[in-house]
Length: 146
Image (cartoon, rainbow, N blue to C red):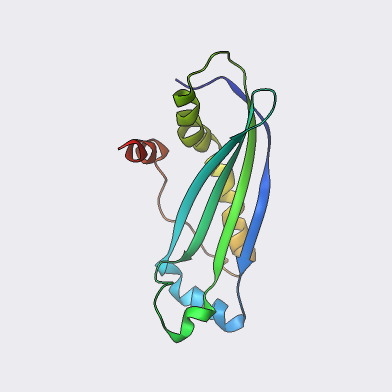
């Protein structure tokens, strides 16, 4: 069961696009299949039953720790997308709020977040990029509890 809520605002809070030079872009385009998307979701309470949620997306080469010549030539993309919402119910169990933030809110907001992130990647020199697969936030939440 979802929590009755209202999205107050949402925006790109922080953005980092690192492409050291043209050679790095060429290398990244050739190796983009080795890049992976990582997510980190954090939240903090605000006044008046509002909560700010940060959905952080990091897209980088999975093999970034290899010691080789191209390590310094890696591209890196990171975005923090903030969503502020208010809770429109009384006396909600904190565990329900946690599940809502990590599952329901992400399911609601992630298509918009992903669209913004992919557009930034396209503008950054990756015009044909598509992120692989759908994210199952309920599964991730269950794994987190285990």
